[in-house]
Length: 158
Image 1 (cartoon, rainbow, N blue to C red):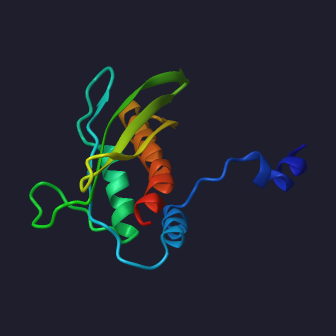
Image 2 (cartoon, rainbow, N blue to C red):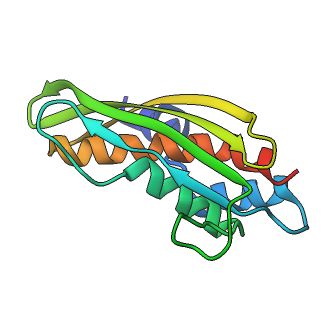
Image 3 (cartoon, helix red, strand yellow):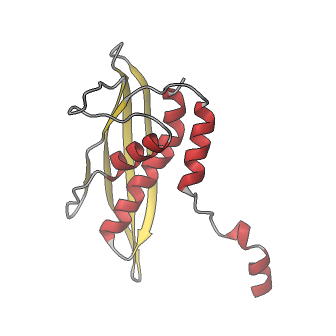
């Protein structure tokens, strides 16, 4: 049995995506050319005890910068062409022994500031597990943000 598990490990264990691979994939989809300025604002809440940092917003902004997008905000000299807005929340899932799961959902809209119309509307739900509830929540939120970035950023570069 142990030998079978070792020989089939690559199909039995979920592969953890590497962020560098995600950035390369998005850059390839973007191609060459000047990318538009974007802004990202996604407030979030963790139900139960509050957690305050915007993990999904940070993740989308980080990946966008790594892909070459100029990321700006209201204090920047340059204005954004696209505004990524939305909301995110996480909540505690099940506990198994010392492990706690949290589920997160991120919903975003991307407004083309030249036309005022929404260019993209998307959402993503993910789960993460950790020994700490807040760390599990803060891992689930950026995971959702990364999956959204993979889908939305190539659309903004066209």
